[in-house]
Length: 421
Image (cartoon, rainbow, N blue to C red; front, side):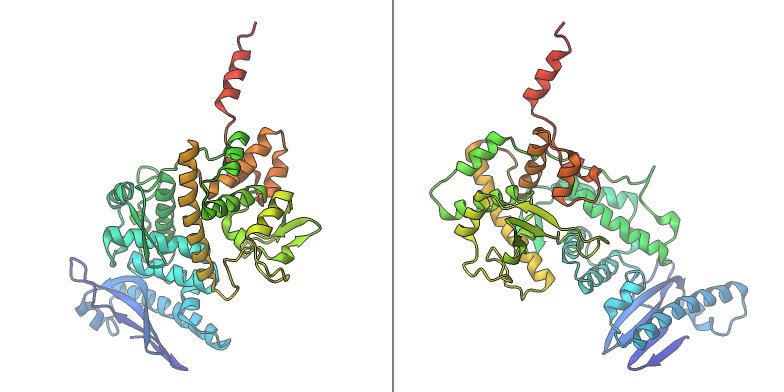
């Protein structure tokens, strides 16, 4: 009914007869064709075949309004296509981004458009998070999940499924673990909620179809484990050895992370020798350097212990542009670098779990280094503002979430003061 074609790009309104509703209606979509690839964008309208055929000539007021809505959707897509054409950078990833992440009438396609957009922006961490969420969702409900399927009851069943699921996929490799924690469940549900919000804004679903919120599905928040360690526990880890060099290496990488302001492993792998200046290590967090308006470097004192770890496990080539630790080569795409980081974290956590079992320390992981750094400083009386700056947090409330409570012995001692008449 509406058509536009220029520079090998075609935009046309069409009735998508691949998916029928129970009352034999089909979604009206805007189809974009480029280099023999096709993408479909929803108008939020559904018509029978008969109504679609008479739509161009009918004088019915109701159908005239439908026709106007379809034209508005067509014009929106056409305008974005023309804008991208004008600056000679047309791609479906950019079109999806400007279309509100490429809303379609399935949850799967919305996720894929979001992932493509994140890849185009180089936001590999968030891209991987949405990838994992989509893998989990498709294992539960398949590859053609209509937005209308995502109800309160559907979300409750999905939550139950995640509590029992024991596998996940990372870069086409399958891993097994215990059922999902409520923290992970909350993350995946929030990803779905984001897609539903964008679907409403794009006119794919109506507001009354939204399944989240009070009296609907509220997202459970995990209370989180207390991951911080005592100084005595940290010392026992640093002193631990089973005679295996692999164990020693992962133990030392964990200790370096703890000493370097609780640096996470992704940031640690991106450190270069040029990061070392005036006996300090300076770096930007990979997680926020593309999104934060103010690029503020984190600075950590290079202690003798850190120097020893670099000397033992670091790159022998100490040119300024060389990575300190030999896991990246600088030729990786953002996603490839992220996957290498996750692989190292997985291997380190496996070895840390064995160390923790030997030392009777629960939940020992790469993440506990960051929590321990913050909590040890807190227990030593350091200012929370200083801890927040050292961690690279923009908000002190984020820092407070990292700070575990004092040891039980400390609480017992303080409670005894209440009756020391």
